[in-house]
Image (cartoon, rainbow, N blue to C red):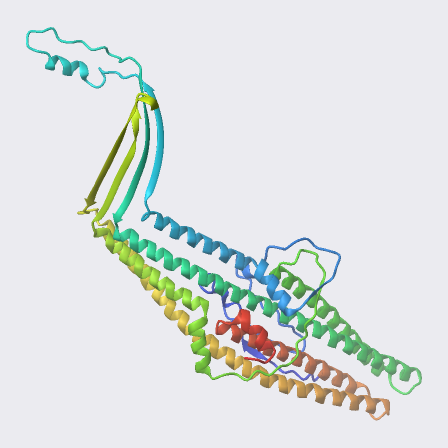
Length: 495
């Protein structure tokens, strides 16, 4: 009969990979742990690969075994993560859109050099009908040739066109500028998400490494019990059932070790994908997962920091402003515009026989009726403005939720670490006593097997609680918009 001691940690991981900010929407991540399971969050979206779980590999694999600590992993992720690279490209796209709108307000200057040689059909343009009407009465009408002799002319000219006043284009350029600022904040938020993704993956990997170490120790303990049971069986001091029971326990631990090593290998592969290591590159993780208590600040302090510093919130504010300016630009389609055009150049038979000419014209264009096109533009802009405001309101509520849940997770995980640590001590004491009783012949090895399972469960719970405690720090740093700089402080127990 098995009586494993289990400490179940149920933690809402809603903040994890909240990079689905305005780009993707990942459901809440619920992680439940026990003595025989390892947390492997499933963040792959149906039908598509999450870009923050991929990367553009940097360099080529070498024969060296890389030593990667937490800071190095974050730095590599910030260089190579696919989600961040795509966010950078989106920023460049927004910058191009802004220049496109700005070009409508800047002067357009063109230069042309033209050499023309041609003949012309006077009959085709009606000169043969015109000249008889111009001839004096009674005179013989002048007959013109149907085709003129070949002639040529040269024209070199610079042309300038400038919008003096176009309120619609002005507002569209202002909206594009706000969208560019929003894209820059989105890129900054993508950096925060990369830190969150790398942090979670690294913590999972070192938790898996700790799980391998404890499982190896459990295999050694089970092997020692099996050897002792075999010796006692040969000496006639214990029944065969003790040897069989210890053999089953040994093989169970060996199977768990196989699974633990496989999980560690896969988690390291996942981390390598996120931070952009070359395929096949060998590396080891140099960080462990020590417990460093973090004294949380008041909730209002974190909320104020989140609203002031979170890049996704600042981007949403700018998107609302851009939508307001786009709505104003749509309404400005009813306003008059003022434009001017000018050109200056030389024209003549050839460059040596040319004469300078110039022309300037300006005018006001007053829209009277354009088939309700302006009305349709305003309706579309109104809808986009409402969507932007609704998304901003939702994001503000989500920030409040993420900060509160991160604090709850942090406090709960800290308590769970203390309980799990105590459970490990108690389980190891129980194991030592049961081994002494078995050696003295007071009890069979059933107590030892049960005690070994209790120790394994206690260690698993401690590893999980330590992982969740450190992950809660990472999530809190992300929730307040300080992941890139704050994670390193939080993991060391500093605010």
